[in-house]
Length: 387
Image: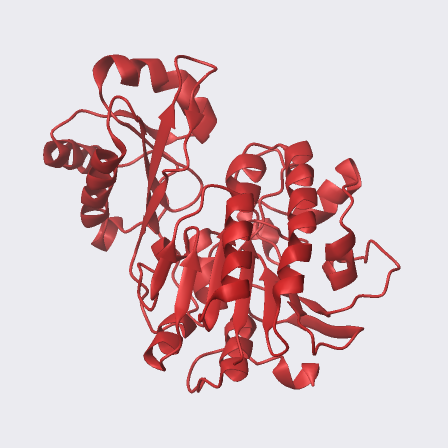
């Protein structure tokens, strides 16, 4: 039985796209700058060819998998557009952003619907706004609403003030509200704990409420063709659960890897799709290059267990959805190429896939591998180049 296993290293960009300057991201290079400044040891990823996906290869070691990089065609640099394009859905019109906060009438209607006042309503770093407004939130019980350079409506609340299930409920209300002319890509519940400024900490009970895919994706097509699709981490959220047979929540990168390895060893899943969000949420957005490097080293060590669990006809894909350069002056995503590594027992050495014109080549390759008709979905399969 052929299986496809996809690991999305959230934000692991490998160099600025030609139009990066249009997004304020000229010169960005998430992986390259982490390697330059922190020198992490990545033996498994190096052998698979990750360092060969950079503009200038950062090693002389010969890769043992197929390797290349992919350009984004979609109008954006966020989680939703990146994942959708990987799965064959190119977003031509960018989701709306709110750099100056949400319109007063939108916030007033939101407060009316949830029966509470709110705090914040501005673009801010998630950790900074907790230090700024966390204590007032605990005192008043008003949730903190904020956004970023991405198309997101984020709601933060202390778990002892607004329980997680209630936070999820008021985020679902925001999802109903933020449609049409006020459409945003994601509503994100941001629960946290802690006793005061400097001690507030997000918990793993985050939940994303994404807009429903605007067309059929490879995920949905695989499901319709009888393939069992398992989404780990925030994958089910990103696709609004369309085409996902089983949703598995994860608490961290390491938890996601443990659960992915368990599935690879003993599951009947045909398509295992995992997002490893810590690279982005804990390190990229916080400009924490040392933390990003440590996370890469941990992932590299865990990768050995997954490679050992692969069956003869499995294909393992390692990629990313955008960049988030932790050495950048901002804390926002960066418009970058993403890596495409394809590994498996039958993959030959020294197989360069070059620069792919769209993230959709990943989805096309999965269709080809699993025997799913690609039909009108965009992208070009790399499978003929692996034979």
